[in-house]
Amino acid sequence: MFGLAAVVGCSTALTSSTGGESATPAETTLVATTAAPPTTAAPTTTSTTTTTTTTTTSTTSTTTTSTLPANIIEIPVLDPPLAAIGTSDGEEAARLQARLLELGFWVSGTDGDYGLTTRQAVMAFQKYMGFHDPDGKLDEQTAVALSTMDLRPVSRANSGTLVEIDKGKQLLYFVIDGKTEWVLNASTGNGQEYTEPDQNTPGETISGVSLTPSGLHNVNRERPEGWWEGDLGEIYRPKYFVGGVAVHGSNSIPNYPASHGCVRVSVPAMDWIWETGIMPMDTPVWVHDGA
Image (cartoon, rainbow, N blue to C red; front, side, top):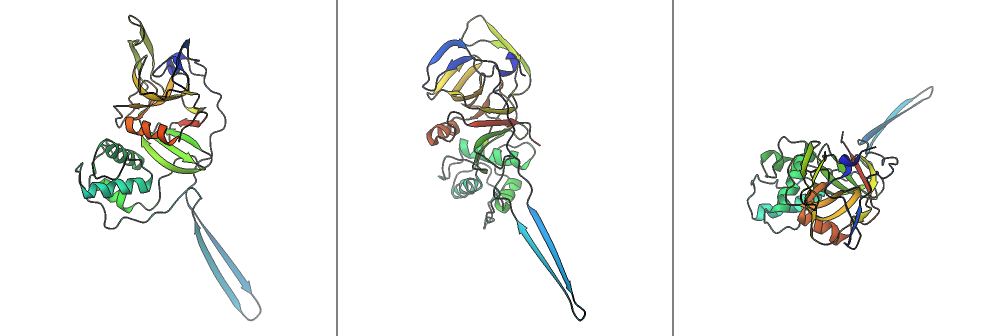
């Protein structure tokens, strides 16, 4: 069981689903953890050999079939392949955006503007692939990998509808009916101790450890309006899933764990989450350390 320091997150003030605030401190008890969703198995190949022998003839037949699990989806390679354009705008950036969407890495559009959501999506892809120092730029390694990828990315869960947060890869996945539909760049708790001013109580300080609690939780409260001054800084349209820990929008989503315990995504991504209704109240949120 985590203590207060572990679950204080970005805010300890209760917020209703309509945005109202209560003076009552948030509960610090973790949501009961149940069994984690089943995880994805690697594609399998089965081989069957049948031999029939009589007194006069011998017949041997071999049948080999290759099947993919239902949650693994094949996609065509990109031809012509993407060019390494860095962060340049233009037609190639539009092709990159379309390819990212085809793979399930969310971007706000295919307008050819190499802006915030494109950089975030490329960084998410680089994290997924395990590239060193993901920076959101379309370099040669990233362009080749995006062009030649022939399977949509998958999270660990292969059943149910949930939000999956991989602290090892620093990614957030939306799993719908067992299939990984969307991947977002994320930044979780950095694991460090802190003592900082309480933004809502002048003269007071807050101490704790910046942890994003692992386990199976659920969205239990939310704030639909824009920016809000949490106890440890500004947060955008949060969806809380344990104590004061939430998925929320931020202006800083680096390629490493950087938060006090919350799960940061970009502000446009958080707007998209609200607009699509993809993360309603009671949605399961599975947080794990990765492979």
